[in-house]
Length: 68
Image 1 (cartoon, one colour):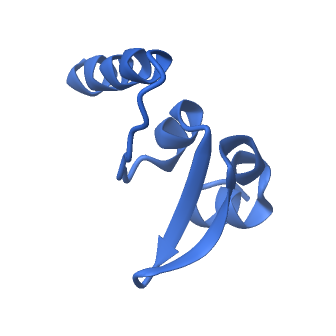
Image 2: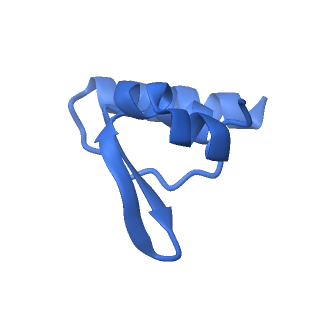
């Protein structure tokens, strides 16, 4: 419940056109909130794009979303 409340608060802040930098281990939840996203691997940007692009990326789906 706490995570949901935090994500709802972030969503509301973002609706007010405030830019938010979110560092989150739950990739699916973060990508559902984000407009733009970056994937870091060993401290380097490995992928970037819109949240929708990354949600559709086979590489992201396999490595971070637990999908085959």
